[in-house]
Length: 377
Image (cartoon, rainbow, N blue to C red; front, top):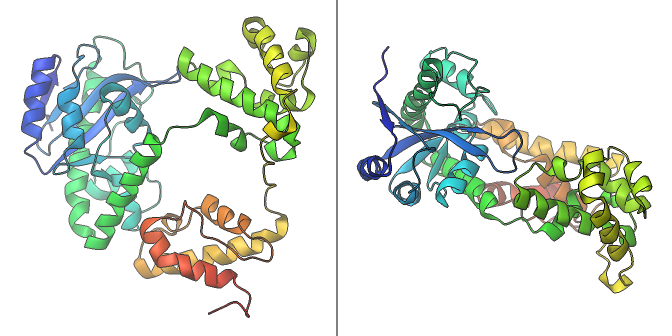
């Protein structure tokens, strides 16, 4: 089947087509990008589908993105994407805006119990009976001209994504449709939340094994790494490798030779930033106790596994009742956060990460399940 493809290569054309798309009930969006040696994704192509034709937007020749930003923010136009966390980064980097409302077809498939975390090709096969060609996902999207195969691949993505939406939307109840949009809004909100560099250390591997004095060093190392990755537009591991952070904070080397012997320490890091790192470690290692961060909680003990299983079974039963993929109900991190709030003897508090419809449907049942017989209402 020949696809009707429209190229958009200049600012005026983008503005004109965005004005047309503003009148539609939905648009399908996809992006192709490169992210090999950079912190931020580099957009190579944007695709828009309206259900009839595919539009290919060249980000290398366009520099006025306000019309697309306005479309993304128009609450009357549903933006359809698939497994879109990285696409959202691309759109935010280009336009400064994020899509609302957002309909993620991967989420919709899970709410229809077609499968959890379905890849796009598999979803298209399942819903449309079309087998998509493979092989272009990792090609060079910054080259010009793009190959015929790349163009065809990108156009098909946009066209079929719109068709998948048209098929899935009527099968969703009003509640499930609202939940898909709620989860989409959560994806957008998570990306909008600025990561505080001084909070990154909490998620570092083995941070819980460090003393508060050592955590003061880890906090500074992680914050510096986060800031430098963004400023230099390099992957975090190109600044300092992940596995080097904990031994740096624990042993606190005071010379370049000792720094070079740290586990997984890249020689380039020692050459480029060694002296700075030694100074940072010295300064942060000598701060007064009132400036130490609080201790990082230990992981849940092994005997908490039975409670996790018990809570998951509650989610599984509710998922079966709703006929949705069970993985949608209760994320492992949420259950762990719930248990950490009061393990082993309670009382427990619902974590902030349990929000929206999940909190309404499951919150009290989870607390009741954890309550001792004397505490139950």
